[in-house]
Amino acid sequence: MKRKNWYLTVGAALTAVMAAWTILGFFWTPYDPSARSAADKYALPSLAHPFGCDYMGRDIFSRALEGAGTTLTIAAAVLVIGFVFGLLIGALCGYYGGAADAVVMRLCDAVSAFPSILLALVAIALLGRGKYNIIAALGVLFVPSFARLVRGEFLKQRDRDYVKSAKLMGVSDLRIIFVHILPNTWPVLLSGLTIGFNNAVLAEASMSYLGVGVSPTEPSLGYMLSESQAYLLKAPWFTAFPALVIILLILGVGLVGEGVRGQLGVEP
Amino acid sequence: MDEPIFTVSHLNSFYGRGKDRRQVLRDVSLTLAPGEALGVVGESGSGKSTLAKCLLGLVTDIEGELAVNSPRPQMVFQDPYGSLNPAKTVGWILEEPLRAAGVKDREERRRRVEEMLSLVELEPEHLKRRPAQLSGGQRQRVAIAAALIQGSRFLVLDEPVSALDVTLQAQIMRLLADLKERLGLSYLFISHDLAVVYQLCDRVAVMTAGQIVEQGDVDEVYDHPRHEYTKKLLAASLALDG
Image 1 (cartoon, chains in turn brown, orange):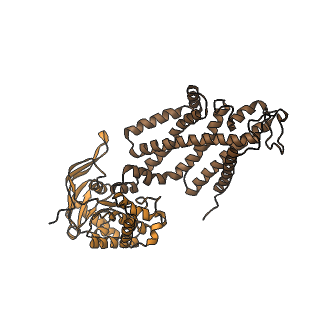
Image 2 (image 1 turned 30 degrees about the vertical axis):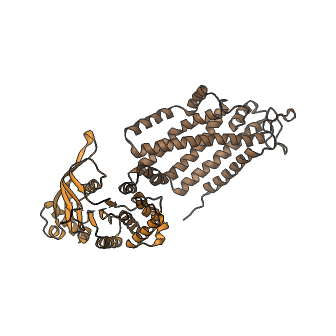
Image 3 (image 1 turned 180 degrees about the vertical axis):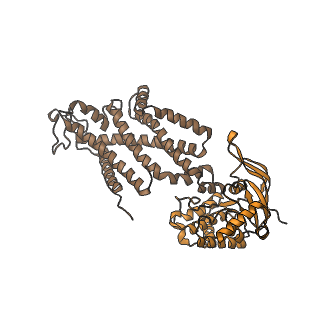
């Protein structure tokens, strides 16, 4: 019996559309996202400005196109840092165990005990604002959750007979970890990655919303939301469209994660 | 007489550390001659599998003497679902031991895989499949092939047919007997099933509570059991066979 996997189909389609949106934003926007126009202040959505204009008369459609790129770049970089270090730490801790594992995992517990946004705020206060500082701060904060996820999977796998068998055949530890065990953890890691991606998008948006994100000259979806809150009643489209882009981005990737999990029969 | 495959004398082994350290094997002495199949029988928890792990170096907390003279002894596990990497194809699983042994030439690896495949009576079309796409019997054949492909001549078989149904059991037992004959293999055959041990083994050791209580030729032990525990085991298995 094979039921059609709607999560995966819809999620992949939505993600493809949002990816196309983002890539388009890197190369082309109908207007200069930073160009102001006094005549278009608070312009309603129209054919000329599909998403309307903001309090400075800037085209929201153009800003949402470019902002998606900024947000996604930061989210992707954060995810890569969190995942790569989380994978290394989690795999080594899970496979070898012992005292080093206990120490590292307690460190991870200590980091995750604080709300991550709070820690990121502290880091930004120390490092200063800017794209790269945000990436570094959020990236480090994403490491513990990935490390714990990966470690759990390696703990489950390391006592399986196929691992013993590989040891008997003289396969090196590193090869066992990355070539023998890692592929068996992908289903769980993939769904962890999609959740992590969504958290990264939201984290960037939250940071920018709080005004400690990217610099104001660079549109990001979170920063647009932050700017728009003063005009929520006067120009609701200023809030609605950036929020919609964030929601669709997260929904698409979330559905893909859900679909992958269903496809591979992994428990949540 | 040839040098024995392994010699174990007065072996004690332990699990756990500190306060939790407890003894599993007690004063175990055993040898295996080349070309011989030695059965180890006993109920679960009697220390049979621990003995196997000691021989393979998977349990290292031991006292006493232990010498294995066969290069790269391998193990065939009870559950062929767990002993084959579920993420890999049969071809990869069979090539990996060769890669680990430093066989760099791809053609050479392919050739040896195909040779081994026909020895265990599988078809080249199985190479592309993953373990989940094979039957239990086919999986166990792959596990046996992977254990032999590095050229090992001594295998530890840990309940290799206990997870299979009766028809498949008979096929795998026949294959094991056949391979032993053709390649001159030596087996340490661990089982709780006295009937399969009788089919394959020359000698048998009876274990309970970490000790060997009786060992000798299969016919001798089965016909004239001396120890009470052996008699009980035999009576139980006769009762089951009806």
